[in-house]
Length: 424
Image 1 (cartoon, rainbow, N blue to C red):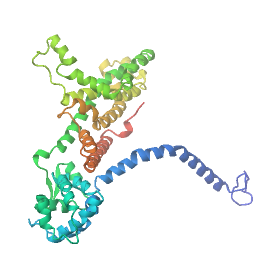
Image 2: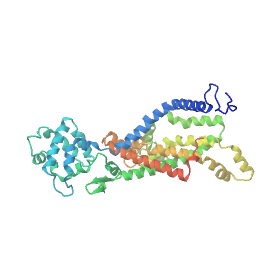
Image 3: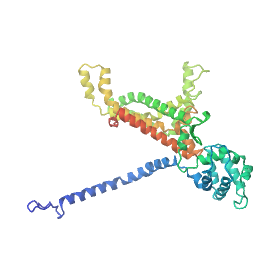
Image 4: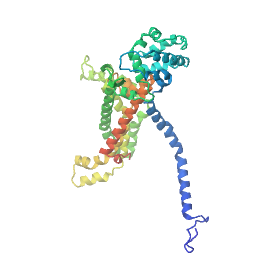
């Protein structure tokens, strides 16, 4: 390094460049090297987490299939008053036939029918059946089409059919979110779904309630186990830790199926209670296909996720604190409640967040042991993804669930403080 203080110029590095410039270049190289080291992880997180969430958010409001498949019809319906109670004019039917002929050639009419069937039952079969006859029509010579369409299927003579098409023709819609909270889009605005279809809000409430119960059950069961593991000699503690980790070596499906066998009315639990005389043979407990079965099975499955954070925090609590409290005359209970328990709260917080977030998204265990009364909203999301193929509604439900989790996380941070959460 050259001392340039005598000449009044900038301080120079060994290679003759200004020291400030040389240090800046060195810092840039260090930052670039660090970025290259973590770039595989960043790419993995982006493509496995951020991109799917962004796709889910977009799919929950995307509704371009109607406007893309029926562009002429949507434009013609813009001049029709859907609240008048009268069928649209011949121009709408003419535009519809022109759009449908193209859609049938591109095999898009069945997809359009499936989309509209989410809003009005019967639309899918109407589009599919009408497609066979519409394919034979020539838009240039076979008009007018209003009476012909009604003859092909009487649904085209129903005002509600055209109301559904117009109401759900916007490329961006809030319809999926309305459906997710037991509401629907109508020509008169958002309205509640019929009572026999109002199930999703109930499922959201059930999911939150049962997830909190499962989290509380895990805390009550995990705390004494974690305390025992943290206070026993290391050789014994390590041996007992194997039993805590043992469930991770068994398939989730196997563990859940085992609970289904144990909880049924002819299962191990009921048979044991009958043998002990605690339950009459004709009054066996119903602990399967309901909330009790789901809570029991999921508490067992998620218990290790509560024990491990608690244990890692309790292991760091100095034993000298409790000894000092006892030497000053504190009872065992006072020592535990005033000295030990406050220091273990960060482990409880970490385990609670982990268990709650895992439980709120579980769907395999509730599906197997929950029946109709113990399923979660995640089971409904899985149904719409794999069975009904209503991915827009599934995305909306997932987005709402994500929002609820983030809101609860924010509330937890305000009340407890996320800085107080520790994993050891």
